Image (cartoon, rainbow, N blue to C red):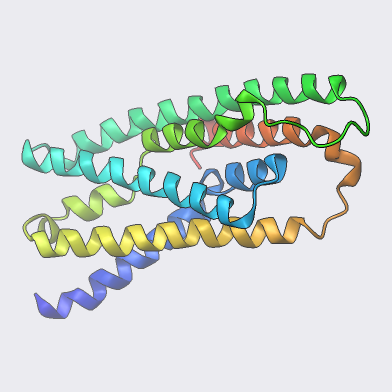
Length: 215
């Protein structure tokens, strides 16, 4: 009904904002990698946004598939839980590998040797993150899209997806950019040698938090 639309918009936006805020895996990997790889703000923003769109889009596709096949919400959510576990282990594995690579790089680096050429491992980082986030479920979106009043209306499904998705992307990009700007003022010169190793550790810890703490 028409009077429910403002509530639907508010709920979709609120859930989109809060699910990013309480899930550090939605922003810490990007903040860490932006610092480690010294990405520009523009590059950081588009990589974060791309991963956010993949994160949301995969859940939308799964929800629509569930609706088309007449699957119950519980079954769709079970599939999302499995995807969540795969994404968490993806973060853990990638973080550990990147940490090991970063430590090896730190101890092999020669001081004052000038600007480094971008290594193959570093150039793959955006696409590895994108793949992990495509596997990562957007759990709050499933019940929203499978709610009877939404499921039965194409307009409401599009509205929920647009509001939730837009809020999620803007919140992720906003937190990442503001945090990246804030890090520029911290005295971390002594840790510069270990920036890749530290980034890997952060990504790994995010994966551990998702898998074992349910964040």
